Image (cartoon, rainbow over all chains, first blue to last red):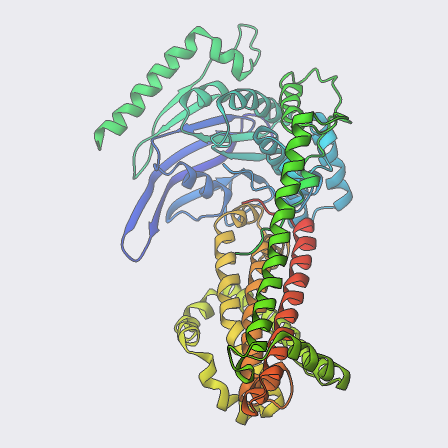
Length: 265
Length: 315
């Protein structure tokens, strides 16, 4: 897929959850386009349907109205093209690290040897080579989450959906892991959608940050983040946090978010 | 109530940095994180050749405390037996009613020599193990069915509730008429343990469905894959808990079944001894039953340990 062509498109997508007691309109008329190779961050007040948005893109939920397209084709179910990284790593304690990262490949019935090879390669490359035979309980939270990311990558998706992947980690690990994940995604040339409630994280990692309103949510504003050097180089999230313009973005987005929170009290 | 299985305590602390290449220009953060892990996983005296005197004293004190408990337990048993023997001998109580340890030992020898005791113990043991196997396998199959086909769980829910609330002993005569004196024991055993087994395994499945299955779903896993790759391995702790409950309940069922109808087994021996007013026979059978349940629990604990080592689950 060529860089820059639209890869994910939501066309007036709405979704309501139905329970016997009530219907809840989670998101309404969301229109959004993510280009191939782009990193998009989505922030919003808690419970605004950010995760719902990812579930729609992943095909785990179908929109009640509107359409979700990937590479111009309508999404009808989960697809090998999309990798979903959840908030919790969900590693299987009864498998070692290597057979954990090949879970996705196993489910998708990909070639076993090839999956193991690419898994080993990724583990080596991202500093977990020596832990392939370890059990997940021997790893720290940050390492576990990195294993979870590699598990997603081994299944060879073009698109990565990240659902608050750092929220269960301590602050220090969060910052270093954000750098790592950012680098991995860039290196692998993936398209990524990050959902988070941490505005700074979104600004530091994403090329564009979208702010969602309260339920029923829509995308209320989009910010192009330009914190790159003059040379056009892509700095790490860490460096971006140090940029003087970082704070300006933060203030803008904060105000935008606050407006939504204030509206409904 | 159950001794908690020791989940691979030894395996957990085997962390090392071997094979971890330090030449990583990509990532400065990695060695930092891993170093922290290695540090965290080598606590205490592991690795250092000599434990400190304080630590040795601590270990010694622990060992002594443990010994004291064991010694007291044995002493208590001896005391109770001696007391029992004494009151019977001195005629403070009627030994027709209470029997006595020496009489028990005597009738144990006679019964053992005749082979009657072994035959009846064997019968009861076999019935119990078969009952446990049937309830576990059927319970698991039904729980899987309920998970796989939620509709069936919804339809059958009130029936399960009623069956669970019903005192299964009331079904005794029905089992006797339908299954005959031999198989009605199995009927009773399974009736008593099956429903609880289903309910325990099912609730374990439900708990799992909320967590790890979402991951499986995101990879587009089929139900069979979910069952094989997650539900069964992750349910091992639930299965072990169910098995432990099952041992107790199945024993109740088997003895109850033997009381009601059987011509063999320890339950039969107890009832028979009561009817002919032979307290020695009753008590020997009860002791044998106690011994057998201890052995069964021991076996289950052993199995639990092996399984937990193979399928560790942190929750």
